[in-house]
Length: 392
Image (cartoon, rainbow, N blue to C red; front, side, top):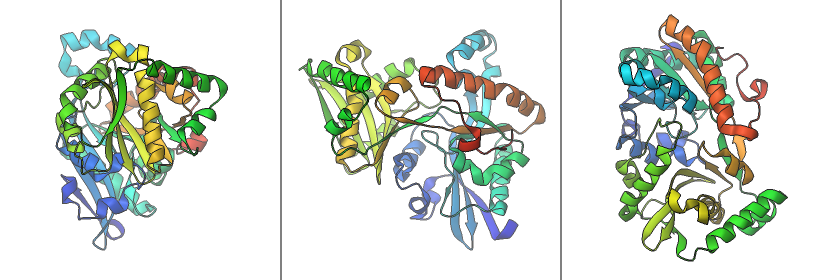
């Protein structure tokens, strides 16, 4: 082993020594809590399995990279609507051609990170990338993706990724709202004129429906069937469905004893008509997944008011920022969210498919990004936001 490092692949987060995950994971990113990964392992949200590549030195775990194994990912689940329409005849006539064995490195549900408590040196970086590719070969997963990494997180892997034939493609940005105001009213007052007027109008629209109320619940197991039905309404309209949360995942987060999970739910009597699942860690919060009854959403501005309630909850919890999902950019930018650029580093184990992917995927993913962002589309800034030579 190079420079005294040992690489090991674990098949469950529970195989990590107690405390190691918490020591290495981002303290303010709730999507990287042990509970989220434990919930993923207990559910069937998409991958065929999970693994954790660990690097040890002198017996201590110094880095962890989560891995998601997709044995037969359907290609039309991860492309945009235009590409999906082009693939429709192929899905009908030869669906097996759309099944892609793929290994995702990072976090299936959130921003990608390599968990480490110190800068990764060159020998450790080379060994990690080699170990990822070796694992993909053993598992017969031809396509390998470091998913949704911010450029600084890819930086330590720049040279070994380049040497291994990885190329960069733009991902959808995250949305992050800095919570600098003292109160929610101060936050609304500080918005630019048009967003401020729109926010106040949407709050009035919701208040015009006295039959509706928004509650924050620590225990919501009794609502899971209703929540899943609302979530399916959203997923039925989604352009991409890489992961679809299920009952087991939500049930694992729904216990009253877990302070990291809260449900912001809109109720009509005892019937849920919208929800936003909120997770907390340190000074950070995430509005992780949403569900809506589209029959009543528009008239009462439920979508917006769920987000306003989540902002209030995060502020009351002492959070300094809250992140939302990689969808519906227009209302989130209007709320004051900043766009956090993210990138995929990708390759294929075989040269010919790698060349095809390198030629086609960056442009296709860039077009999907442009369609999703619409008028809020900033141009990616490679010199500032991503490694300048990361395996192009």
